[in-house]
Image (cartoon, rainbow, N blue to C red):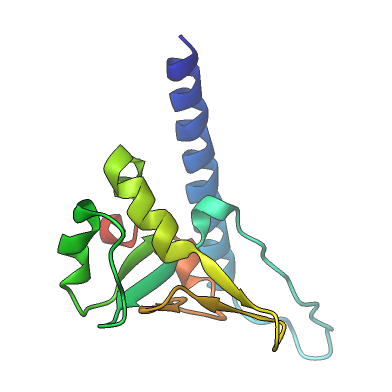
Length: 137
């Protein structure tokens, strides 16, 4: 029963995020304000499920599990966040390894895991917020 409730809550959350993306997209297509009218900025902070993060693995990446090795062969960019395949138990460890940040106390900075490069698609735009899964939209 609890699992069913959790699944229902997840579906409702995904629907809310998708609706937010449509509202943002529709609002962006309206015409500019009349001359002399002051426009105020709108800061959009998406929910964690609405963000996108892509990764690429280099030769320095060392898979922590046999389940992670097939993904290590590709040199292309792939969806790191949020990819529903990480809900499969063996792949969760691979996901965690790739998302881990390493702290450098000397420089007081964080770095990606060795061999993992990351990027944010459409950085600075609302385009990445339009769909939870870009392959579906």
